[in-house]
Image 1 (cartoon, rainbow, N blue to C red):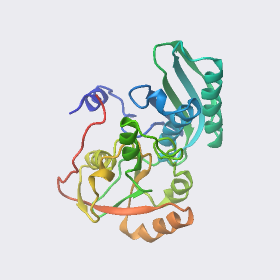
Image 2 (image 1 turned 60 degrees about the horizontal axis):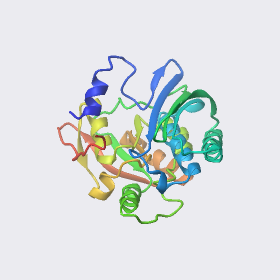
Image 3 (image 1 turned 30 degrees about the horizontal axis):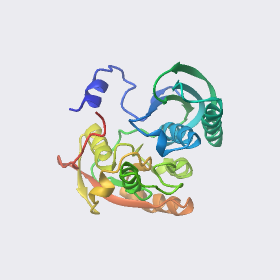
Length: 272
């Protein structure tokens, strides 16, 4: 067990386990976006930092078929950041939140030697999409094209430039697809730790294994921070899910079937 999993195991609450905690029709989620852990300031403009910090937090709500309503933002501000940069950062976060019907209603600030952001999202759903509910024979699929985030992160570490619309800067959230496909989906989660690791989490929670239908290469499987969707559904619903994917312009790849075995993908921790 890695340190993240061990820490989570110490949280003794029935609400822990999904992308957000579901309490009635209200969902609560929080993610951090820390300098020198998730990004370097020389890689991104303040607007890009604010936008990605907000997008990765909105992703948790959307992954659970929830509509983001409110955000609480904590920012640690280094001394070398001035008012113009703060304006750019906060303007980007406000604009991005508003695109998804979400309003920043408060938070906290603290002085620090690095730029760190932590955002809490409060969202609502009448029918949240959870991680538990798989059965033998169900189909597993993912949206989008995986691998670009890891590829471009490695390029940044080499000191290279990447495209302004790179998935590392600008994750694509599949809100239309999730909201329309929800009646046909049994489980879902966003892909933040890579397809391999996140599929393993889904299998562990449901106490099943997997039968591979399409080979995934390691560049796709180990690429973290994709924020695409990993979904599971009955085979009988495949045509309906594929039709909604086509309607919403969402690339969808079926790659595995749930099986009664202990098969798992290789997984490398992205933490520590």
